[in-house]
Image (cartoon, rainbow over all chains, first blue to last red; front, side, top):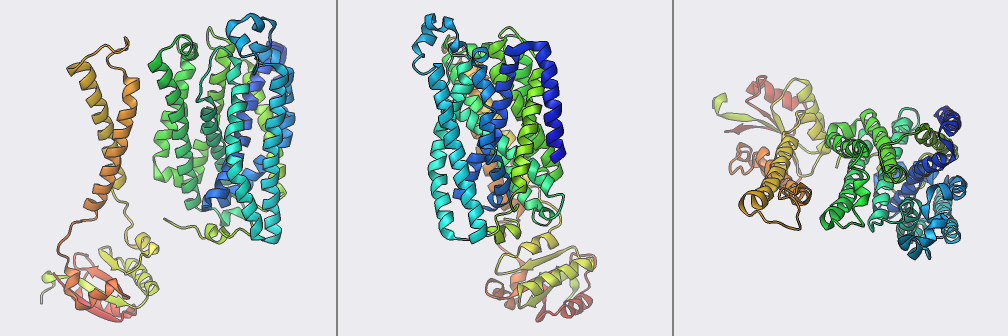
Length: 379
Length: 178
């Protein structure tokens, strides 16, 4: 798996260089935004799930905690990877152009959408996210050593407040990163839509990691079909949450039928983007939803991993569907970079993730719920 | 007493573990028609005795699909066939807006199917059951554990089966009359 990360990173970077030669700099930055938002979805989703499981308890949280923590501890490194977006703002964001000052709609948004404030916000988000991740994982490691119950109290308190902060910061961050790609259009559900998507990405990724861990000692003696059944149910629930939020946005805009809102869907339906839209509906919802209805499938780690991997792929298509049509409103457009950059960033992220995962015990040793997690049985 | 009028043979145990062991050995002997009675839930027993999965998931799925069809059909009938109205110039069969009520009815019908299906598939309501003919059986809701090998089982043979149950360490073995 370690090699997998490195190979993906090298292959991705090589393909990126090739794609860069073919498609040029603008295309590079646009594809980078999709790839980066996608992998940050796994990281931020892990941060949210980590806080949720600290508050809710439950066996699923105990077996998934260390993979989530490892993903969260990549945050400071992932922050560095934001730099290309900061450098490529001119290629991505129309509101940074000279013409924006005379555009009647963008000029009114200039108070919020201007380069210094944008960059300042990004610094703020990454400091907040990294700090939350640092505190949660530091205290968790300390609890492994000491078993001091006061630490669990502190973790719970940070998780409670942290979730509120997570919802607010991610909403603003996603408005900045992807919604402002088209500054003429807006959607108030945008942040939640991404939050649901991040939870789905993080669960799909976590399931893949746990299935791999369950194939070798020592985790093969810990993880049973009951754990995977629980995780499969969560994956199913998050898939429905994503579909619910996506459909809500569509239904509201479709019902209102306002000229300033409908372009978002018209650019994705009245041309060859339609095929990607249909793929998202079928591949991101109908197929995985129907399969995950089956209890046998959720209890089968091998098959669950196939579905989880498929969902990760569909998530990437969804991010692409959100961003790319804004740059190519006349029809479907695809560049080598659109696949190379997700591979490159994924390789880097997985390498970082694994080096973090390796540093600690795979289970929280002193957790009061560990006993129950090890003897997890039917409910 | 003839074996026709016999529901089965009942064995009494003091502990849940003894019941689990006995059930396991009875199944190993090839008994298929048996039932265990216990004052507390014992999760292992279900895996030992009830190897076949119930049809409940299919009942729930059928309920859900019926609900979806009902919800969609109701709206289609109302807004296209019976009371067509022009609302903001939208098509009469605005399936996008039909989805939410259809979804709600899917969930409603699926839950009702789950609740009713569970009751019916469990064989409830059941005003009469032969096991209550055994006087000691009243202890099944107190602190004793019972295993019944039923006469419908092809391997059932009253004296042999009773002897077998005694060999499993039963505290008492009783005939259960129909």
